[in-house]
Image 1 (cartoon, rainbow over the protein chains, first blue to last red):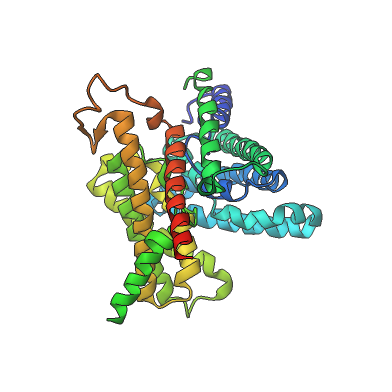
Image 2 (tube, each protein chain N blue to C red):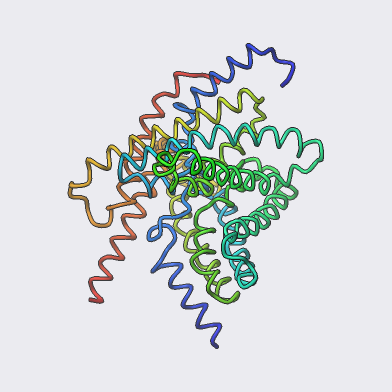
Length: 202
Length: 208
């Protein structure tokens, strides 16, 4: 990885960033973060808050976990330990961010605070970190991947919340209300995102 | 006798009344992605049942010595412990399957159903009850996903467990490519949720 020149890596990060948003959307193609996606997509405002929190946490935890994996776990041959370490780092980081925001920006804390603890158990975060390790991305590419995945998740949940707000007053068969109709819409959105497949070639 | 009764009670709750997928709508994330082949789903569900039952029992054993404010961390660590066991066993004995499942085995840790059951049941019940609760919730989860996986594999690939089926793998059947792709999983799961919820609603009406 390290022998690649800086420019090549930047370019690769750029490609990975776009593919994480459109062709390889972490939510619609890999089904990660689906629980909070179904649960929190009733209103645009809350969905937006959670989405922004996910973008932020995903980018930073991808960066931190890259360092931890390559400079702590690999030299010590403790790769099997990665699940525990990653989840601890994510939880600790989320806790830390919560305290910092609470201390310095009460307004932001009020808007974002309630979503932060939810993120610890959002599979999209751990999923993005594990994908980053399995695909052996370099540091710059990892950051691009984390940021792109976060934006992809944000876009998907915003689109879903917008659609669900419109659906609120429609007559839906009783068995299909709530999660059922959400899954159908997610399926349609996934179909639309598959249309992007030809745009990028990896 | 008493244990048999509790097991039965938890079985009805987990498999039907309070099914993880169509009632609680939890834990869809990590397992939906691997429902494109039945064999992947079977392995994944077995891993999930194992983790869910044993981590519920362990959390329940430790519930009186766990400080309340760090319980989420403790629960996550216990779950991660069992997931690592599963992951290492798979890597050692079935590397091909481990490669197929990719990150999804590790993602059982953040599967909401595991944490959900430990929070909802294991923290307030004795170990045996918590074990059965985890076990039957895992089963209730597994059979829905197996239904989804069966339809996806037969319609999308014309095979079942990798074996070609008489009509579906012949040239007379147009394979539904969409079923193998992600949207197929969403649609199939939506249909299953719809069917099961409708059955449940009509049963509720009858009892009233």
